[in-house]
Length: 127
Image (cartoon, rainbow, N blue to C red; front, side):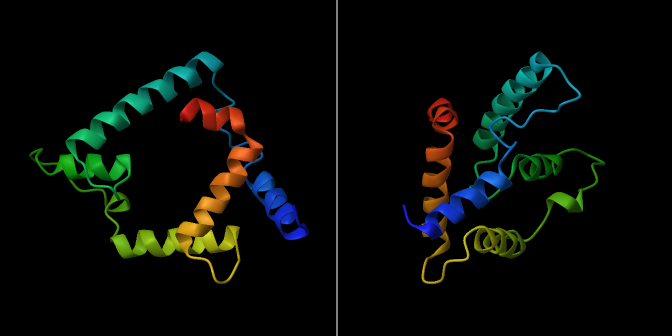
């Protein structure tokens, strides 16, 4: 591993130091955190099935469902144009991996490999 790779791994480790899956609320018990994670995963699966758009977050999916509820007011926080979401995502990827000559997909793949190397137990649980 060269010095650039080591520096990138250190940067990822600093940024994700306490951000393993799941991110726990320290003011709640482990049981509450685990239950919330399980419920969030279950609800996310339902939302992915009923509103199957690949670029929508769970909140954005709920906003699409809100359209069928009389009197529901859209929450603009979850109604961003795709270009805005893309620009924010690309900026963050470039911030994490400022390597020229790589596409965003390649950078994410590299970051994913670095994450898997740093947290193999997390990746194995998710995978």
